[in-house]
Image (cartoon, rainbow, N blue to C red; front, side):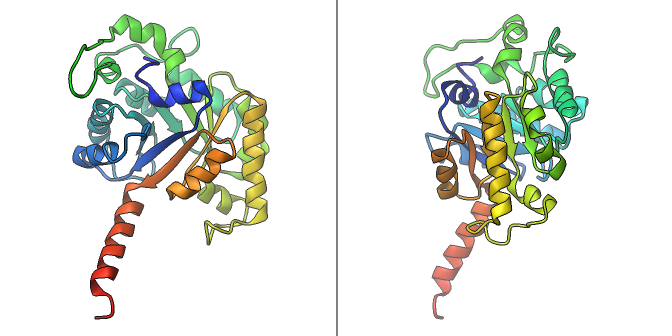
Length: 272
């Protein structure tokens, strides 16, 4: 499983990992994103703010995995049934929003891990095929059995929680110390609103927000965890990678399409 999970592999090796962000349904869109670049490690499937249903999530997870890109599902909230649906679909990891306390983080781990580390129920029929190792142009296929999934899942799936509230910032050291949490993922827009400094210009964040992001990063480093952050551009993602962050989004489908269409029509219209 670890060989097929590109995000987990990058985190384990201490390397930066860049991903795409899908908010709109459709596997044609998924394949277009996943095949847009050879160094795209993961695709975030957004069930919190995106227009993606449960059945669409299952199809997008399958399409992403088939492209060799790790599907990461952001659930709407940390409910056990939501986490179960995402992992049983074959997600290589989950992102759980609005985690404010260490106890909430421990619950996420409990719902995500098989016994004895948690209480996740075992059913791997849909999940195992999302970890098949196969070259996209043919060659040997390495299948994963249900028992192998059970034995490896606890150490092979990425569990990330979002730090995006004032309460989470105050409790970040305790959250980072929770065993089983792999990534502290920063939602800069919600975090900025919650600490009273909304982002009006991503290029000029308020100093207090910059300090909050640094605080989260250092808490993760101290606990031996990775730090991730949502970015709207590749340039911004690279800046955070150079600062030591490991999990950065580089583009969101709705942001990218709006930008490309606006540029094309502005160029077409010109001074006409």
